[in-house]
Length: 323
Image (cartoon, rainbow, N blue to C red; front, top):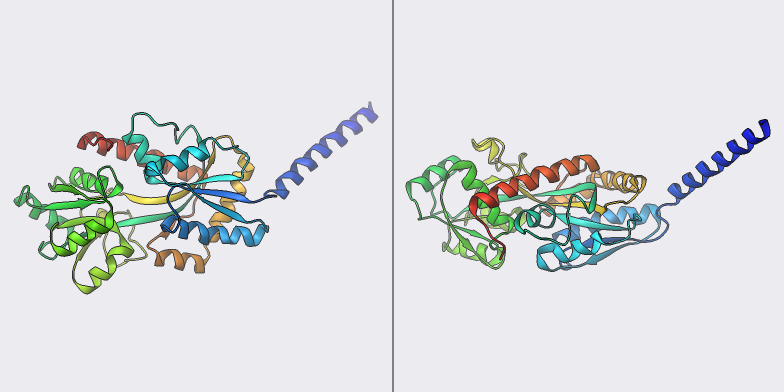
């Protein structure tokens, strides 16, 4: 019996040692980060800054795999069906993970069933900007101005069903204001028409509009997140402008296929959080209009559910249909 007990103890120790060794050796080959947009976009900047530290620490390159198409659906599907071994990750966005599932009755993936949250990367606050012909200096003044002029204010967006469109509908739902939605094929032409006075209002990313705000060609009224953005600290939030709880943002977060081992998810999360907390990286992200948002997998999972429910309510209320 003593010999059997000793033999059993030895086998247990050997097994634990093998498991520990396997965990310690991860990652042992390149990681792949699938981005659901073409190369060169904001998501690329965020991911390359963060993954540079992974490469330096672990000695394995991180391969950026741009899979644009169908509003993020193409790239998201790739990761949903990837091996759950901790070597393939999705750089998910609000569009792909919480808006599309609320907008489309049938998708080939379920963000809550097919993915495991790894961690939030950044929040990309949107900024509410107005043409100077609108005299309002605050959101409350804008709401009153719009109510007194029903059907006279044109609110642009980057397209029907996009985050900028849903941001308008959320603002209408939260404040009772009215405005005519004018969809464009992207944010750039919408911004051009805003500067030219063809439309009066627009939600857009902070870096794209700050030069126009600083020159006086446009006026910044509020940012969309619950906290002020580090990229524009002087601009109040909608929530602190008299509409508590108002929140929306574009965001980037990291996801793995659903059954990826939790130990590997935890290791990636720890490295991402460490990178996002580095002052040098944080400063570079803020310069791009992205607020670092390090957190746990559980926190990302809870935020996803909240965001998804928000957009379901907005889409249903506004009667928005996929284009």
